[in-house]
Amino acid sequence: MQNTTHEECFSDSGTVGTSPAALSTADYPVYDGVFVRADDGNAGTVKVGSVADIAAGRGYPLAAGESVKIKIDTISKLHVIGSEAAQAYTWLSV
Image 1 (cartoon, helix red, strand yellow):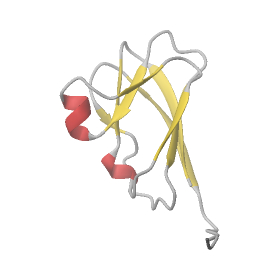
Image 2: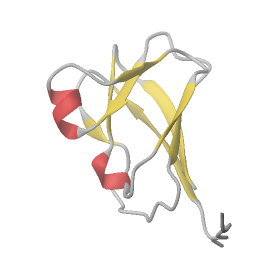
Image 3: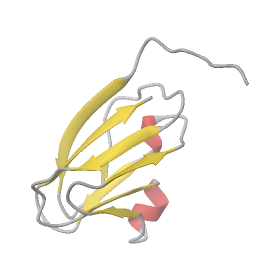
Image 4: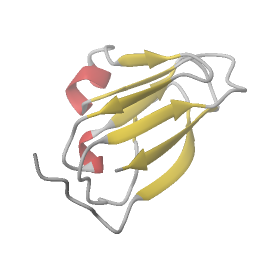
């Protein structure tokens, strides 16, 4: 197995309510996946997934403080939705 090193990673944060939103408005490169974390102070959940999953009411739910790593090649493929207003999240591409 060959290890590959990338000199850049990208991260950002945002808030989402009950309307679907892109995880990021910029299309950053992804080398190994994206970590998404729901803020510790959230009262509800943040669901993360593809545009189609989020539109259909699906997605991977993250309670406050939970995180998930998603193997994907570009940030623009991920969307989020909150179970209530002002649910905060952060993400990191690696």
